[in-house]
Length: 430
Image (cartoon, rainbow, N blue to C red; front, side, top):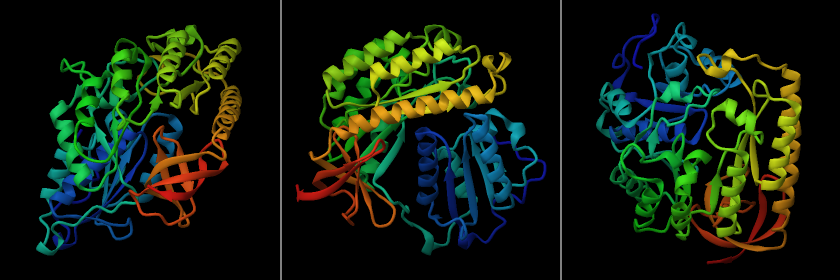
């Protein structure tokens, strides 16, 4: 969507072209971060500079519309930023254009991309001294989007309305971007999309084929595969396990279950059963015993009874995920579920709290097994207060209170554990 709000500020090009500095604020999923990175890279290639919000000539907000609360928070933020510097982009204007219609801003975009970045960049020819400005970063993680849209028809989800049907990039296109990001210094490549397991189904390709191609690229780096819906994992499970066996692939799985009730999953139109999820998770953990498993749960979907939520709690106890992203059901305009009767907020909040307590207890116990262990991990991100964050082969987060260089690999002794991360001390440099 490229429509301009009725009260838009002057068109790009009217500002002082010698000062084109930009700031991007991103909300939502890894795919949104990948969209922002592609857009920013196009601007940098055109000679423009990243900057702080205060110094920026353009402030780009890449929005999310996944829940009502997220939409409300972002609309409040957009209201604070509105003016001639602001560009609004992402899922909110794509899925709910009326949400930004009265906002004062320079331009409204849809999903960010390299082409939209080039178009904006061309409107601001830079002065020679600005050309070639690098990217500001506090980590060595590159998010590479492998597709847009999805094949799902989930009754509660607005993402397909925002991003459309599945459109995969070719294996060659993804590999080329990975090589470019590695040259920029990345040591972690995150393959992101709305459903990584659906990758290539519109091209006659597959996710395992893509993983194999990326893993063959020369260089010392790791691959993190993004969220995969169980319904699309099932037909490629054995090939996926074969691809995951490559040492470059983090032993990490984000497999969202959403509910442990077969009836609720049918209402959600998820396309799998609770037992399907448990079987897939068990098969992958059998292949990779140290696998880190993330999942998602929606608390309070319309029609969810107490026994349905109790079934979800039992499923989580059986699966023992290392993290559960808990979301209270939120009605989204235009979705099938929005026509159903919503349940009281107090019930959704209660179930959300119960699930959060449960997964933290499980995660604390699972992380506790690492206390006193020695783990080899690579420093990938800067933390707060002089700390850094390292990732192990199974994508465990290790927080280190030492100023170790980004990209360096160390052996860490785990001296403390929490449900969220491990605390490590470097003992031997590899």
